[in-house]
Image (cartoon, rainbow, N blue to C red; front, side):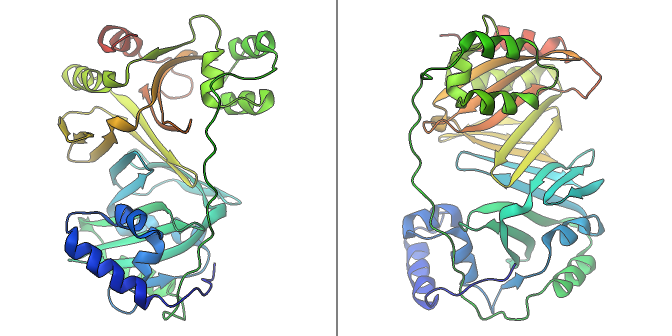
Length: 348
């Protein structure tokens, strides 16, 4: 996972410094968009000061995360940030696909395009940050006051890249092509029959690929009673009801390189600007409500009965956030969960 050369980073460092002076509260992801670059390239301007480039097999590095003890795992996409504190446990890999199955930190890792890794120490905050070939954040791990800093230092030394004076070269990302809402020329009856015959929620992805359907197209062609839209502004009353009832839920946030899951209740809910926030001691969520183009309640059959989920989709047709009632294989979903959705969501 060697870094490759690109034009000199000094000019970018100067432009970023000027931008931060004018926009002191802006975050690095937004800075990168404003400056027409990537988050990884901005971070690399700190090489030689507070940033160190990592190298080697990131699978082996992830396997050692448990040595850090209590940390904060962060996974995000353009519209939602998922932060969960806990310990990396039950870590395994099958080629480049990894699982972390701890009680608190629950991850699905897709390391095929984890290209860059950094150790970052800024304002007494220490982290390991990983990016894909486009320079987009895949996953980040932050130390907490309970973490083992000595173990962190040992890992950074072990995986430190020999050459720290490099410029990163990131791949250019293709423009997203807007999806059509309606599917053209497919066997709707067969699709619906196969939906009703599902045994596992994970098989839904295979079903979409088989029929060459986008997420929106699939939901629009669901069997009667298995998918319906709710208004995007439903999320605040739903969050409030979950908080009040203390119903344990599952919150999935994904990007192409990682899925991060919180299982448990959510308690402290508030809105700040366009962001709907959960701010609990061990779990934080920051959801940009104005990014929700469509919100769907989706029902899928499994061997354990119907599983009901809420799926949030953006204007490009990307599903960026999912919610379920707490459940595990072999255990039916909580009956209170679909009842809560029915009572507190805002219908069209």
